[in-house]
Length: 498
Ligand code: FEO
Image 1 (cartoon, rainbow, N blue to C red):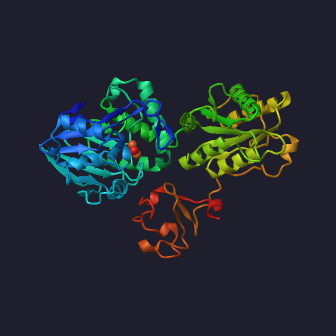
Image 2 (cartoon, rainbow, N blue to C red):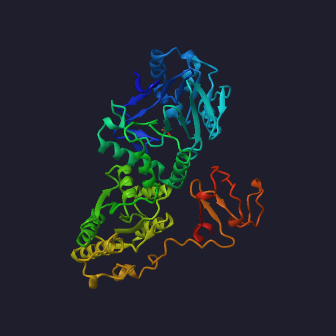
Image 3 (cartoon, rainbow, N blue to C red):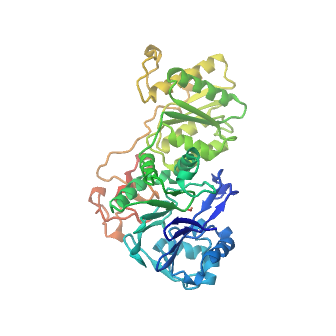
């Protein structure tokens, strides 16, 4: 049933208490979610977004209790993903021809999902507006890659409500709609979980887009998201949180995760954690077994951490599969300004630690040397693990560690391997941030979609001739794959470029 939001705006969405999986099974929605749709009844009647396709019929049925559907003048679709545009087919079967306002990319996506190219689409661009009467307008703001190419926000003048869609939302279901009504700890936990697991790769865009929106100097009285709460009390608090999270966020926290065949790698994890605590009792150390803990919770902790230690037994000379899966996901999330290290127990070779080390380095972490223990760690090996933890604490300290006996401290990057492992050639000191300096011939990587600008090739489709250095590429350049500007490009490392 509808909930009054402000003046002539009503919430007409759908709660989903029981959903536990999102994006396939990749995101666990432990608190359920909601699909927020809004009905605006000014001189014109506007529907902002719909709900997940599985609730299409309930949504339209409930909407008919609020309004004669034929009175809807416009539909605005801020995002084409099926949890927001999913009910369009059932709705438009009742009111065919109703204008749909969305981005050009959304038309492609909506048509791809619903196969109705004849729908009455109207393409919007940033700054376009729609007069809805009573002196109010809807102003559109494209937000590509936050988090899909089609994403946009809609701002309603007069009432100063920003319909932000996924941005600033959370997978959080509560009978109460407004942020000031719900449990604040639960709310912020879910906000961070959502950001960490979904928006982290797009942090550079989050910052630039928020500043672009703030640059309009529009008052914001409410932020009406597409999932979870409507930010009514101090709505800009979540904007400030996003700016904080987007700025290479970290706390004085270390995440350790591992998988362990015979409990040996787990013993190492515990001893390393003790070593960290010995030297720096102030740092929060969180330990997870990837086979037993919620993956999104681990990633949320990694997001909050200054560094991560990843452990695995060696199995068939490689790491255990669940650890490999985590590393793949971590690579995609493109964390910035974090440190990492590998550890693990082995029997006749220690391939897992080498591979974890390489993957962490490739993912952009500043890595320290790996730590291997043969078979089950004995007392001496556990002391080595504990000493390794002490070194981690010293090297990653965010504050002076006055109580540390520095005479005991090993030099930075000194390997903590026993002689047998140290003789193996494949664990070496490596500079993990081997980006080449910006110079002639520098290739550039789009941090959002991974498209590579190669100066040898230029970008002929934008009249950028072969041989054009990045510094000479005009500011109007847009990434051919994701349509974003030069600001999201980073120098590419030699290794990636090779
Ligand atoms: Fe809530 Fe990107 O869908």
